[in-house]
Image 1 (tube, rainbow, N blue to C red):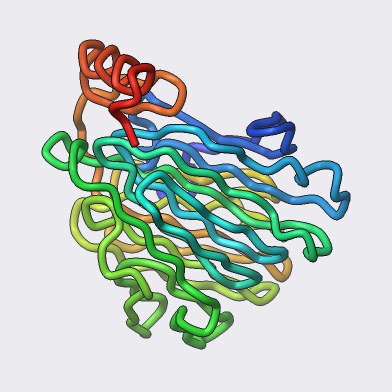
Image 2 (tube, rainbow, N blue to C red; image 1 turned 30 degrees about the vertical axis):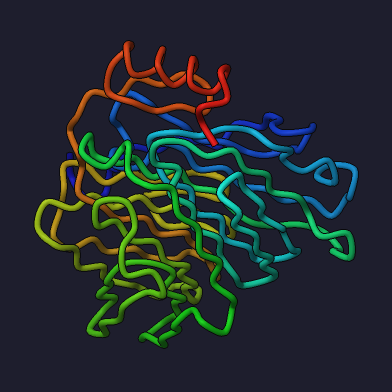
Length: 274
């Protein structure tokens, strides 16, 4: 598929948790591989998000939550607890199983952020759960010609500038960055061999690629991708090498086989998980 005609997916309004209004793009058939789901949480109305995400289980993947506005508190069955506010991120490896909650901070005035699900390869799906919160000041930033980037995870080359994110390891070598591009400017993104780029536009528009609330998926994998901003544009960049493994999904569990999903359900119901 040529560089100027990526797969374009539009976020669909829905609800999750305790009635939190979100916009979601998900695909468990490999089109986003190694990513699985991108949720955008955005509202100035407290009733849209105040219920948060009460305790629920996960197995087989990682989550990355990144905030542009507001605050969230994480707690899980492994004893991890943390809070992040504007500009911060929370990373969790569910691995072999964890029960966690994400609740909005009461003193927040609006909420805008993202949660991304990153798939784990088969050999890491039953790894030990882990958690880390990353405060805004700990996320590296870099200026580039025509824009600015915040590097959340992985290694990036934007135009002729290179940098590494606050998280050295995400999934099986994936990366996430928050890129802002000035109106009518171009940014060239150079990827490692075999990597796939996803670009979710949360503000503005990318010429021929995506408008606000859309995800551009660049396939097949390309070494350099040019993004041209029609207006001042905010983009959540996600890059990773596709795992190309079977994906079996049931609610909060993502495994490789039906049998593994059945085991996950049984482990949760019998209190083995978490």
